[in-house]
Length: 52
Image 1 (cartoon, rainbow, N blue to C red):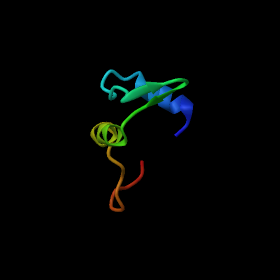
Image 2: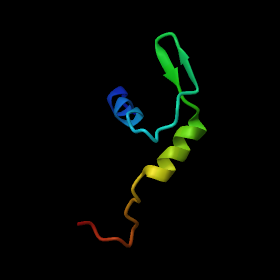
Image 3: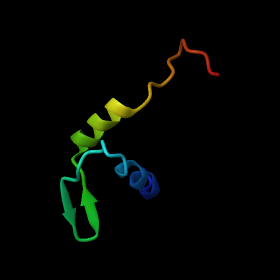
Image 4: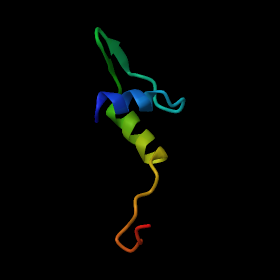
């Protein structure tokens, strides 16, 4: 994931809070981020869905 995309995502009020802030970087727990993605990502088309 690019830094630009990460900056966009962390602006969402529902994005998980950082686990820790270190000198020059911020750390999130992978499980927190993956749970957020699973909840907020739009469903992807399946093989049976037609592209529009």
